Image 1 (cartoon, rainbow, N blue to C red):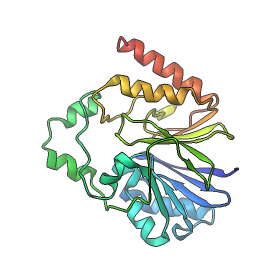
Image 2: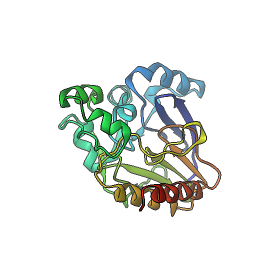
Image 3: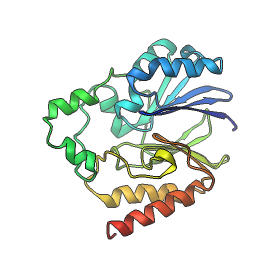
Amino acid sequence: MGFEVIPIMTMQGNAFLLRGDHVGLVDTLTPWRYRKLVARLGDFRVSVGDIEFVLITHHHFDHCGNLAKIKSLSGATVIAGEADAPVIEGAADAPPPSKLSRLGKAMAVLPEPVINRYQRYEPATVDRKLTGGETVEEFGLEVIAVPGHTAGGVAYYDREGRRAFIGDMVSNYYAKPGMPALMASESLEEIFASQEVLSMLDLDIAYPGHGVVLQPDASKIIDDFARAKKAEYGR
């Protein structure tokens, strides 16, 4: 099932417009990037009201910041990981990040209410809750569970097109692959396991939540990066 992918890239994160038989959006940027999102959609003669499906990779505010507004204006079906749904729906606060990353260590000294305020956004109902193994039939996207950055993180895999939306499991700022800036997991092994899953998908293109698109031979890029990181951490 073919569809066009149009990146909407900002310094704070990325979203991706999907155009085929249906109109979809992968992630929604930070709340203060709403006008940029609307303008970029308009460049392709798409309005917020045209969006039929919003596919969320994970619950962080830079991916869900405009979700409620988009759902309100469009009635879009929201699709996300089951374990992340309570945060997206406002039923639970985002758990504090682990100390595996430098940013996580820095945030650990802040009071939890301060961390929660920073991560909070307007909640929205998740219509389809995923655990991995499902298919988003409207786009032919296979759902791949990639826990670690958040408990319910998912990637969306277009097997036919050899491409996937990978959230924050691997960033690519300035075309330099990197680890997630924050991690929910206390286990590097869980992070590496999710990266290994991505490396085995035979991807030519990977669309990250931050930075530029990984291509060509994205699976090899991810595999080489993960192997180097494992060696660095003595794994």
